[in-house]
Amino acid sequence: MPDYKIAPSILSADFARLGEEVDNVLKSGADIVHFDVMDNHYVPNLTIGPLICDALRKHGVSAEIDVHLMVKPVDGIVPDFAKAGASYITFHPEASEHVDRTLQLIKAEGCKSGLVFNPATPLDYLNYVIDKVDMVLLMSVNPGFGGQSFIPSALDKLREARKIIDASGRDIRLEIDGGVKVNNIRDIAEAGADTFVAGSAIFGAAQDSDPNDYDSVVQAMRDELAKV
Ligand code: DX5
Ligand code: ZN
Image (cartoon, rainbow, N blue to C red):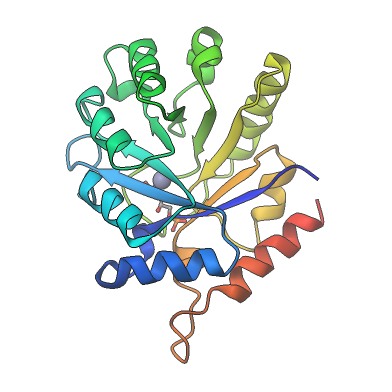
């Protein structure tokens, strides 16, 4: 079985209790913290920046933090996130004037790098920069909001990306982001993803009786992945 990783998107967490939310979701068996950065320019929403990433590190979060930049321009904020403790920094190629340079910058700052492909963005960029990429992130919704429905054509695109990654022989994670739920995660894994972002499916699953309990939803996702 591939080394599957579940990456809860804290976009759907209770921001007033963010440290506690992240602790609880990691305690429930999630692997990576997916950190959505939106700038009300590249995408029509405004979220969180390096200060919050730093605060999570200071709170004691030691899991990998996967910073998904939905900002334009990109380069200025990269060193700030590196200093704030980002593990991965991924960005949308349309948002950078010089994609290769931005990838080099992320690596030079000591982070793992990734490119994010919107539903209608072709994978062609990978032909030229795959040697500088540690993560390929396919959007299965248009970026900007949590709680949207999975766009089915992302499955074919995952198969295409999986082929490209395997042919490269490189150690590159294939992440999917948007509309991932217990009832589709298996199909998504079968199409080639190994890293699964889920926001509303995880943070929306806590019961009123126990708002801190993410065990059952994370376990349900693992059970589905075990069937692949
Ligand atoms: C959307 C973000 C996602 C979002 C996913 O632009 O990149 O990470 O939080 O949310 P769900 O899992 O609810 O679709
Ligand atoms: Zn994201």
